[in-house]
Length: 193
Image (cartoon, rainbow, N blue to C red; front, side, top):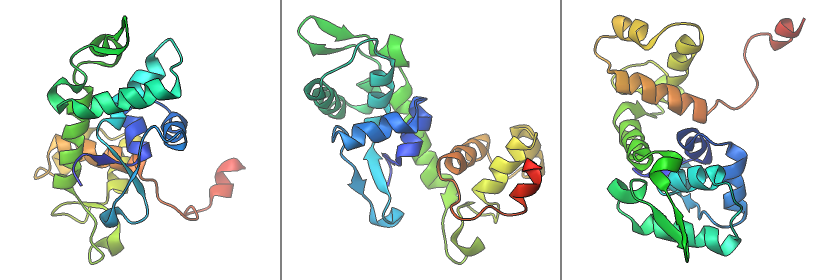
């Protein structure tokens, strides 16, 4: 599933709100892909990440046709030049993508996608199917919990020298973009009191 992202992952990687990504899906600008391995979750292609970043940061509002054309043009570019070169979106209107979103946004998204496939495993036989770091029983949510609890990546690496920094960072981003569903554990009402 390399190069396919949930709407939350697109929003996190592009540093935009999930609502802006969902709006692009509702407008049928970003076509979702139904991936069997991910269940019923709608997956988006790699070019959705730079698209979301560009549209959110542009100081003008684009028409629906221009948005669709932008998505088409981004999808036709190779990953290496997707965000590293300016793009003409209309006659005499050129978007300086590197200045707007950074020249390596698409490459960072692709690296995350590959790291997600390399480091995160979902197996019903391991921790009941909760996503874990490959070769461990450490869930991605426990990694995020430690980071939110004040531990640094170095602290986690000291406790688990067989893991890489990339694995920890990937697990944290994955956990943030794939929150657990259901009733919260513990006694949430106690915090409110």
